[in-house]
Length: 65
Image 1: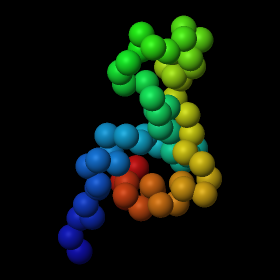
Image 2: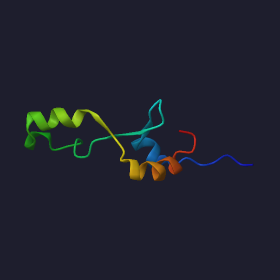
Image 3: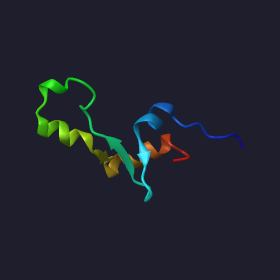
């Protein structure tokens, strides 16, 4: 049986935790930091979890986790 392909775009955006949940960076933290408040920039640093309703779909793109 051939190896399954990992979706490379998803691989760069998501990581699986030890318990199997999907972690993702928060949206809006890439550029334009001068226009954002210090509090908002600080919150954007932390990673977030993918919602439970989307978790199954993301895991299909990451077969080897």
